[in-house]
Image 1: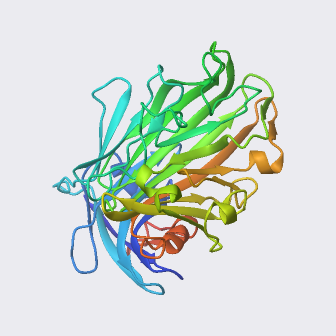
Image 2: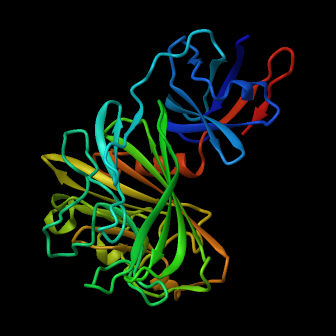
Length: 387
């Protein structure tokens, strides 16, 4: 028999627009008996269909959906039915196309957005290009350039890992990030998740540290795409030192050439500082980089997570188009003890318009203070969970 219940979403202190939301399910919920089914039907308070996606993360189950619009202080109730006789109609959400052995293409809402490339002939995996609402890329992906050729769209790297350069790529001396396996490649109507296991090695492939990288891409409009990055480093091969180098991230982004400050673009941080002179080497919760791309104003904002060490991050941000979060140079590096794990989390927001038009400050609140969601108990009391 189908299980029917309600989700109540509270906007809280912030306006919500195309905001990812999720609720954790209690292990005793009857809904878990239907979690592997595609027969979910979710409707809003006007009876309109809403995309919903069930996902297991470790031993925990979540329901994911997108709040298209909800004003601050307001609430909305959704009805969800699980185990329906007819499955919900297929939605044009996040789709992964894994036809090539070393690349996953990502389509969002039916349109190509980006690719995750993990070709071992390239020093490190990257995401790119990032296609915007008018068909041009938010980022630079240029294999012919001589100027910082290792800057490939969006990547993770550190310039000194036990003395090995994992950021630059000096001939026959650079470090490698070698893909080992995927533990999750799951797409759906609300989000797509890629979890890859990589080992960071010397040029001669001597292991230095293990990395688990989880990339979450959301089904939001082309003028407001979002990617979450959750990175776990574990020192499985002995003590690791991340050196005090400015050539570091771990998050690195290279904006489109026409967007960079040198070509008329603008950078601004969460404190309102503007330009490299005011933003480079300064702490901030986020930095935004915007400019003209194909005759339209587009921007990329990088959000630091409050749980990251040394929050808020220092920023390695340059007029020539680099946007990177970097605490190692400014705080003296980091030692990771054998078997110790460290974690870094970021959200990258690709937006149309400048910082204000793109609502960057409010989108940061979506990241660190998402809407509260509660499952309303049915009359027989067999369901109930608050997140």
